[in-house]
Length: 581
Image 1 (spheres, rainbow, N blue to C red):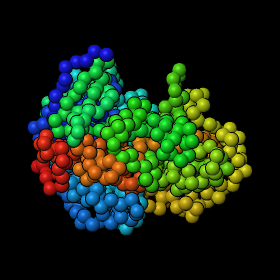
Image 2 (cartoon, rainbow, N blue to C red):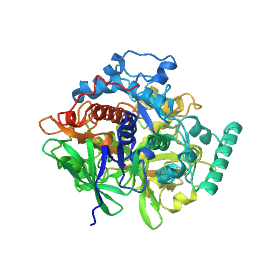
Image 3 (tube, helix red, strand yellow):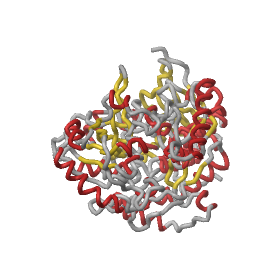
Image 4 (cartoon, rainbow, N blue to C red):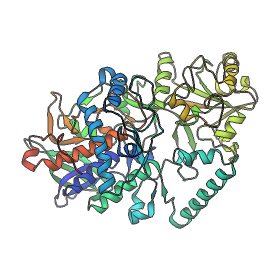
């Protein structure tokens, strides 16, 4: 292949999710020359498909709302949640520097946040918070990106309404209530009308929300700071001298470039959710590496991790779990592979249960997506297919939808004809259609219903925690997560083990410097996002524990790179005492 002249920069970022872009923007704000190399045609990685929430306790938005907590509260929570996986250095880096990261992006970039002051942590262990620990990107007008909007990854299609993404909270709630509330119907009508105009005029929605808004705001900030943003740019090898990583060989539009990075390289390639070989190595239940369906983009194939290993980086898989588990269902696509739909919301609503093929419940359905699959893995006998079924009645499907199948006024027929949904006039008929033990399913529902009418669940305590209740239906009483399953026809959708991303990754320190097997930093090499081993040790204590650390450690990596002059970078510099206000 033809070689182009060498490109020079101070910082080379490989990948363009939240962690990589946070590093790029921060480094550029410190006056460094930055190149972002994204192998896909679009920027955003998994972040662009995500909910966009970041777990940042003691953040400025919470403080401005009068929510003040001592740092020992979230620290105590993580000590109980992470147990033997608790890393004091990284925890303190997140808790001490995360609020600073939010303040920096608010003051110096196009990133604006909304608060999660009513969003509780997943669990109720000591130190758990009832709110004030998370932020999300404020919705963004995509037209502000100019031509760059064409290089923004669109939201995951199956989680949208014909391409229109909905934000969590009131945006989504209005659509759920649209057939029962005039106010919500008017709100939904306005949103749909604006979306229709955007599709006609621009070919996509310009009202960006969730992780899509976060990426858009970071891209705008990067462009404003003069970051060189490259697509179709795949790293094929790191370059190093006797002392440090000095850059990378990157194939851009079919031509290999040598990009020299005077300060260092940041790996931010999204982990390995679509690398079957690495999955077989790390996922105990996938002997071939193919018994798993990730909702992350197909391009996340472990490139960054393999690049790191070529220069001696340590791949850390000694975690509680190797990935951020999530139940998914497979949505058939005409002439194409099925798409994994992540079940993040409807499991907590009143009137749905999850059962195994044996027809028995196995989990509090309103628990977090990670806990749900952890329970399914624990209950599935070795050698059996890991799967479950969500079961509901007609009322539930029409009110809340079931997975990819939308609620009223959307017709249910297409989901039945494609085979995505199963339906039965009776529970017995539904069980036969799904291959579930019919007698056991009938017994399970018969035992569940009387308690559900009373708002109780002595078997699994659905609706018993703040997180359960905030995910349920606040208008339903007495328990926002419980209702009987009574009137047919009945519906089911098959759930399979999936993930939102991987936790196992390259070992790093509190500045995101990549470590070798001896624990020494590899000079000039950093890893953020899912290329780095999760600082939570494979545990999942709250929503946003992927993006919060990704943004924070991307910020800290950039500070370390900025404060390490080329000669100093050879030895590595600790940025723990440095800030950027």
